[in-house]
Image 1 (cartoon, rainbow, N blue to C red):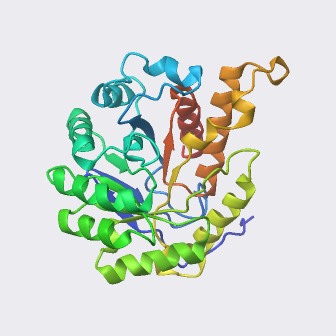
Image 2 (tube, rainbow, N blue to C red):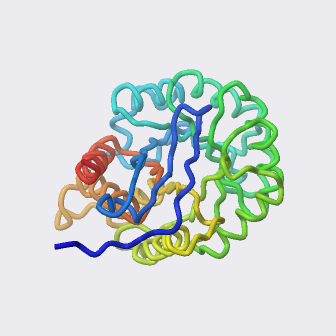
Length: 309
């Protein structure tokens, strides 16, 4: 009996990062539908590293990193060498004007140290304040020309400065829009008009606080629509790999922070919350997933391995 199969007319673009060392994207079918098409590059997992200690984290997240949290380069090395992740995402939380409000000059040393300490692609993520990121991220791009990195988020408010820096220094830009494929398409068009090549764009549909139990079904449907438009409707401006930076929101949820024995072990609760959210995002079509807890990373890697055998 012949099993009915969908014939796809589109393909997700393959984006090479880190100077061509790693490639993401390239799917010719819906996520993990290996019976209908190709998935030449499995979803990749990046682990968070911060430019400054995160003492307010839940204890479950502090435990694996207490020995390295005050050294971003040591933190990154541990994530790669001990926990086996394929990317590092350096979060420049210290740039936040509502926090430490660090200038670019204070942040660049950490960026350089992290990039030099690992042999995997590095994502540098701003503080998500449009004006501050427009000030900091171009200087970061200029400071690290020798090692190509992924820089984001570029939004409709700061894409000209962030995008121009990525053009000038050959980095990949993450185009970030708030859970709307029409806005995502428009920002990709704007970046293209600016001169950013398609080969240097990854999209972030900015799932925000959407996790298991908190609107994930809406995020899933938007990611699903992006894949449908890219693969079935040949929408070239949506045929880009997707990054999901979700760990920060997971570990802020009420169900994780509550001290309630009825909800089960607090540590396991948080790990499963993160792993399950990552699982659903991978199935929805994420190509890069930014995570925090090493055990959640292990669980998601096992799932990806099982689905791509």
